[in-house]
Length: 306
Image (tube, rainbow, N blue to C red; front, side):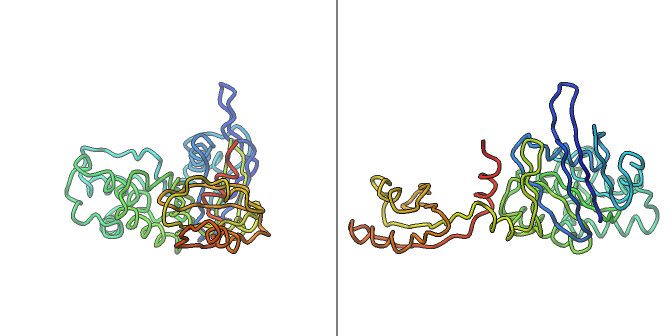
């Protein structure tokens, strides 16, 4: 196993238990999304994995090294991008990366090659001679990601690496993470569900310090309460949705705007024929009707609400 977490607990002096006896393991080459609402324990877990915070109880092994006993060995095998990307704003991009590389023991031609490779990989070629303080948030994230990858670690831990990026920057960073994941273990947290669906082999969901789901997205969808969801598109917004709510098996109706409605029912119910008949009987113009697979957002909400 690349990462092994066993009965990990973190309790602060205030009595708050941020992480509560969680266990999971990651295999080499996996890209795993680490999800949870704010305050669920994601960042705390990642800080313990990287040796920045001590655990109260439990153990963490990274590439065969115990984080509590061999923190420096662990850090040699980990690339870490924290949620609040710490950078030296007065340093130039290339200068900062060379400094970071030397901290990892890189020197000479190897350091020069790795800096050059990372600048190209994350798309910093045009910005490499600028001071970091002159860069946009998107380019600063690229610098942080280059720093995390610089020493070619076996494990990459990224805490919300795409927060605040525009769609083009999201696509670029997503591509870098996907490329890095070909030969590394990647654990990353995010609130952007599309990122997880596009990148991840597996999803771990944590809520109030406990893991509430762990598995491939297909497995989570199969066990997510067995709901059936239909999106109905009408020409105009409905005056009221009670008639949709009254259809057999319907549990929830959500208005998505512009005449679009998401209707959730028990799994054994196929609502499409009933909605079509309702539209015909009421003289409503139905312009679209599609069955949806359980969305990751819906699964996340069902597991973390309340």
